[in-house]
Length: 168
Image (cartoon, rainbow, N blue to C red):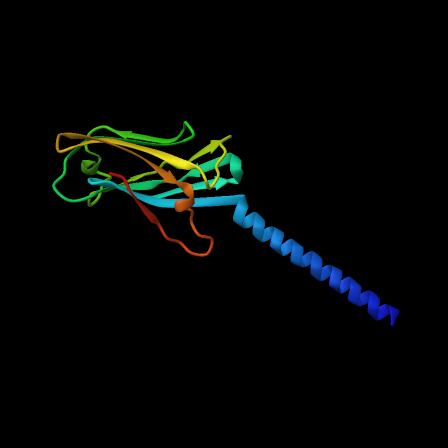
């Protein structure tokens, strides 16, 4: 009788420890890192497949992305864009001339392989990403700025979808 009671007690304790361990691991997976994925659309161009990975709240990894022309018969003369968080620049790209006429551009699309890691930056879901885009299209200069709330573009844990952010 005592032996059965001891075995049941040990199994119950083991079950409880395994349950706590499982939920703690799920918490770590979900809150240890966050992936923010989105596309930016302006009147003249797209910046596609932007992915920012916050690894713990103290580091940030930015993957490569695509720059695409929005529409036809457009001639660009320089494109620059930058992303910042709380005054810290996390991505800055600049291209003189028309990037869609270079040999590595195909069908109005060019790849920008940034792949950079930024340390000592705090990232929270409530933060906003400040975006600035400057370019000249068909001789007309365009300056676009906007904020993207990270909570709106967080990648869901169970499926993949890109949010499109329209900046005009």
